[in-house]
Image (cartoon, rainbow, N blue to C red; front, side):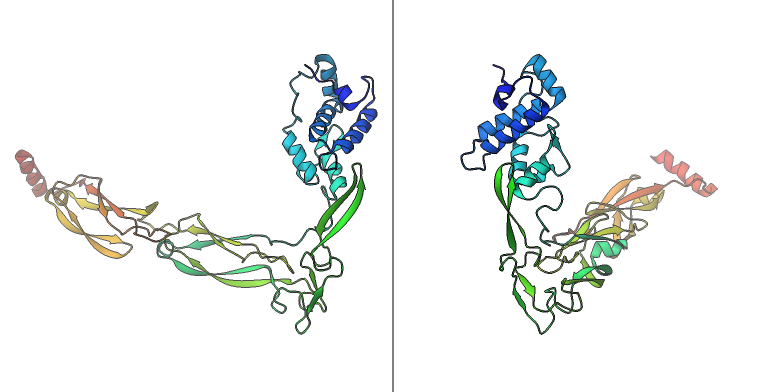
Length: 368
């Protein structure tokens, strides 16, 4: 059975847009589930009805086809009931982009109700955590394989060296914030369309710390952070690959008093080394031998990251045959055995040979 949205909102079918909006506000105030005596089911019905009747296009469709047209049961544009209620209970925070619902900006609606939403209604937010910082570094291939230590310089906000990030002048001390009485938060009561609503926000005076300086640090002006260059030594683990990132906790931007520094992300770019191709933890190299070595076998020297090693070439080796040198590849980042080095043997066929060489090959051909 089709729902009668006009009846749900308590208006006539000929009601104006302003009358529909006024009725919606009244009923939403009455049935809001976070109010004493509120009814979430009725609140949902009221909002569903207003979603349709508050939009000229949808209202015309409803008048023509009833509540069974394609929009029924949703909020259109991807906004569902759970999203709507989450916004209602978080002060409209999920709709700060000016999302419009039947002529009412949801950020404004719930921001007015709970004291925040779009803009700065709720006062300053706590400093919380500082921004993360990313830097890029270049490494030679072998340093990436075996690990190294890299010194980097960063210009960023750091905890004040003089007051250690407290914002308090050395020799002075902190006292309880008079505005929030040490709680770090302050409460506000506002009159909204749903009645008196209380919101709790970070104290703008102490930034949520609950303490303020009796005498502010002269070096940072009481902010607890200064912008300067910092030199850090970063340990690069053995086996790191091109494009991988190292995270260093607490070495990002410092937000100031009462806050926690963000993290530093070091992205590594590895310069290739001629003759070596990496594939995961394994290395691939090539070596060239002549026809006689491939036929009769030989023992040859191979360049590895650990120096020169001997490789036995067995009789009858074919061109592009692959040989494995165990544990001569890339170390695993988390420890354990290394990968392997694979040597691809290329058998060289001479373009020109001497008369004597030709005769020997002809004689050999007759024997094969």
